[in-house]
Image (tube, rainbow, N blue to C red; front, side, top):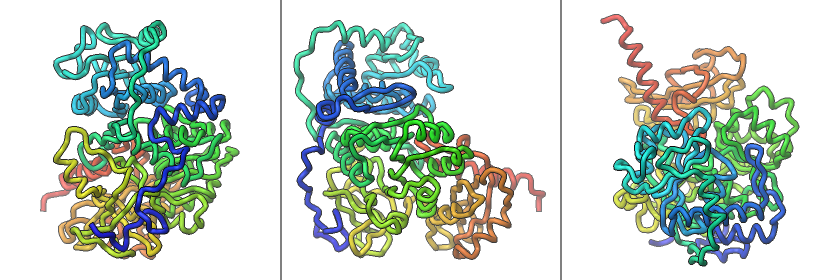
Length: 559
């Protein structure tokens, strides 16, 4: 395919794969060995009161690897992890990688049927679960979906699931205790040296969050994730010894690639938590003297609107955010993150595609003018036609960060990967100097009487209102215009605003067809549609809105 005028890999326009710097390890075992050798005494992870250095982490990974071998884990096996953020989560991930096994992170907020699907579809043979996490009893859950845990595995419902290892105190008869696995590993003879995984071997199967459709298992290689972690870290200023605070769940690529692996690649200390709580995170940022912070707009809005913020002495200077211009402006002003970078990515791209560099002019970073990672190409297309700079269309990505495919879904893989290009389903445009501007998710569009309206644009304007803490815009049916925007709004503490007040504020700032026709003021998105990675599930918001509208119609008197 000929090079188009809007295809860029960096500001110079070169798309060939660059010569990788020597410090950019392309497999996870290489990266851990380098970190333990160069910065063994430095803290690697601080999570929930536990601290571990790079050397200690390497030792723990070696012990876990021996334990996994003793219970039957082999190269190429799929190893599931269903636990909250912890040092143990990281060590298990690393140990599986050292064996040449593939980690399958399980979202701890999934329901039993959803977990069943992920375990079965990914063909997990060894699953690590915690007995209880927050308010969830995972042992009870697995008794419901996998009765064999009280007798013997595999269970008829999960023919590939040979063993479940339980971290905690309640150990069903058909499972293995985590402590027993560690003991077996410690008592076993040193295993024979096994072939190291290659850069193109699969490292992780990441199930998409399901904000718009049923989850698919994105298969990512060592090279995909390790280089993405390295180059993203360079862009947002991650350096050796940095105190990097990330509340992102480890079962999400923002947690695995852009938190765990980015810290490993750059010899930084990752500070994390099991559960996101804005007040606790602010206290942790102050206590650990964190310098970098990552998150999406939801996370940052909750932090910036928390009443404890004013009394915290923060040392944040930067990090990265997947957020709109209005939110990024507030991050810089309110949190003091003057060097914050804006990021765009998706699971299928490991996940980062483009990111502003921390030293870019602040106005460019706020505007979301993003530099592509080295060796990554982007084209903006519509109906197969490559569009020139400045014209919006669907973002297509090509490069070393593009997934191997969707696990065991050849048709979906063929649809997403065409001629080496990944169809993202996202909207963007290229600038004249080769930078990418993310416009919105292609499916997050309201078509008002033939006019395409990016819901993200309306949300950005709403977030600029002083009394709006958080807003999400969806499409609702309209008899005349087919569909129109509607907004769910969380107000700041003590604020008193209504539909008329908010609409009057929006009218000078938005074209008339972009104005929301309905407002629903709520206290939280948690019960309506929030993923554990702090993404709003718009399909759940849409269903909730439909229920409200249908209930209102039923209450209306008959004409």
